[in-house]
Length: 277
Image 1 (cartoon, rainbow, N blue to C red):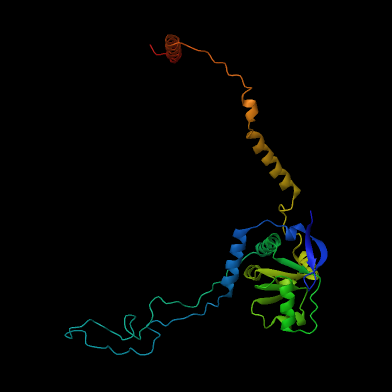
Image 2 (tube, rainbow, N blue to C red; image 1 turned 60 degrees about the horizontal axis):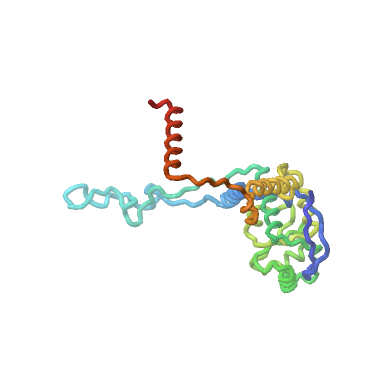
């Protein structure tokens, strides 16, 4: 079942709608997967080149600062001990590799999950084109304001568009990317995503067919949800108040002696059934 997205022009007006693949823009939310991929992105950004010097690497400290005995002070062998000012660092950080290897399929599914979530939240804006001829920052700002993308925005085009890149260069909260290199971290960090129609088709061509599970727009989910709701409604049947008086409840008036006799008979029946003598 295809997903329909509204297409706007650079002035914010409607230009119709397009049908997109539900295995790209209709993927269920996978928060744990997205979190794992984002952690991998941030870890791979780290250089891991931090280094502190130990007592053997700090310059100086070759001579014993004072005699071993008869000074009345503690025994010290070097002024570069970690307990001395100017000494080495004990258990300090050293160069290490923070890299996390995330499988390609997980990275692709995380991108599809975030794109689909943007569609459901209404923060994915599709435009017919981004023809900014003058490459001015003012023109790009007016386009984003017309598209209600005033916050942080990720502008995705089909390939590199020099005019869009130049016009967005001085906007601090705007980032431009080609469609074939979008990633989960940039999609998460920006509140809205602006994509051209050609970029949408490029995304479908690149990542279409990766997701094989159920779609959010799958009609079977709606059928199952409606069936379950009907089952719940059937179990919670309320009797109308006007029909309560029609229900017959036989009432018999018993005297005190008859009531006591019936209770004694019930107790005798229970005792005989349990085998108590």
